Amino acid sequence: MTDDLSARRAAIARGAVTATAEVERALDRAADPAVAPAFLRLDAAGARATAAAVDAARSAGAPLPPLAGLAVSVKDLFDVAGQATPAASRLLRDGPAATTDATAVARLRAAGAALIGRTHMTEFAFSGVGLNPHHPTPANLPMARLDPATPRIPGGSSSGAAASVAGGAAWAALGSDTGGSIRIPAALQGLVGFKNTKALTPIDGAVPLSSSLDTACAITLSVRDAILLHEVLAARRVARPGRPLHATRLGLPTTTMLDALDPPVAAAFEHALGRLSRAGARIERVELPELGQLAPLTLHGGLPAAESWAWHREHLATREADYDPRVAQRIRRGASLSAADYLDLRRARRAWIDRMHAALHGYDAMLSPTVPLLAPPIAALADDEAFFRVNALLLRNPAVVNLLDGCALSLPCQPPGAAPVGLMLWSRGLTDDALLDTALAVEAALADGTGCP
Image 1 (cartoon, rainbow, N blue to C red):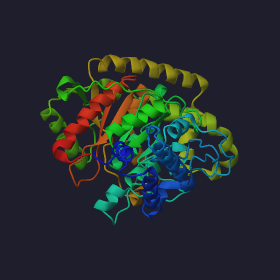
Image 2 (cartoon, rainbow, N blue to C red):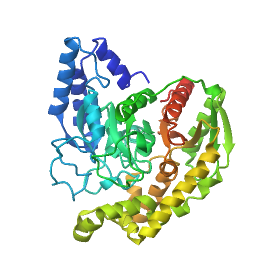
Image 3 (cartoon, one colour):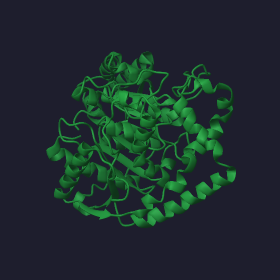
Image 4 (cartoon, helix red, strand yellow):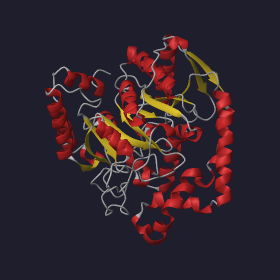
């Protein structure tokens, strides 16, 4: 990827362009009617002020900050000082302005990000589809270019985050991932989405969905940008030994994750596997039966339903009419879980993680399709049965990594000119650096001959 955030930062550093010019370009894109629904609130004045400050400091000889005054969007569930935090809901839209930034936002600001605006999301981040009845749906622009007559879902819950990057209004987007909310829209819109180990990035100052699973992370245009954003959000440096693909051992789980693939997804995934094999990667099929043991962990909606019910139950008792009915329905499943059930669920998850760690031992990463389908038409999801069926399919593969308390990265793997398809690399928790290093090599191998990403 030559025109990513890292490349624009380099252009600013050598004086080929200014941060101010880059922010104006982003604001022009945000004003495009096809891109505008990605944002629930723009902060043009704040973004311009940040860019001007970066340009002034650079002119005075100060070091260029990591994000160089470039536009970064913020998912609507994070606190930004001076702004309300509605989480794309009616319930919270008239709430008080935040007095301080969420830590993730503060770290972006300190790194020189021009925070261009708050992005569309599924209400309270509770679905992977990206629809919200309270707001217009952001376009899936890569799919719109292929099929202008058929509006398709953006993916969620970080729908506007992905759309802001795909539409050129942001170089990166802060979002959250509880069951795939970063990786799903990244996969459906041809972007890179990195879900780090939960503990590495702070989630304070964000409206919660599931305290056990919520992860603050970003959508970017390339793996090297994913590394840069992770270093900012986690306040740590990523170790990159630069291992070649032939020095890696990659697993290909055959249980569940390859089921019911759309033919274009299956074709792109197989093509990517072939490309990686020819580049020297050792790919071994592994049954991984533990993936067939997830039913007890998702009973009655699992941790997201139980933990969101605890947060929302009083609001639902008095203001359920303000909720997206599909979101309220998913939250209410948590009401059937007792405290004993919840503790049993946490213990069962810990035991499953232990079994998975044993099964994954010796592998540098697992390879799977991020999601099994192309972005479906919005019109096809008008009834609840179709909506929840598609939502379950979108969440099926990425949610495994959240339950594992692991790390994962989705990157595009489709041939040039084809509909976006995501390839997911995933592994155990706290193996983020090795996974990112492998992802760089995978990205390079896929770009050599496929034109992607």
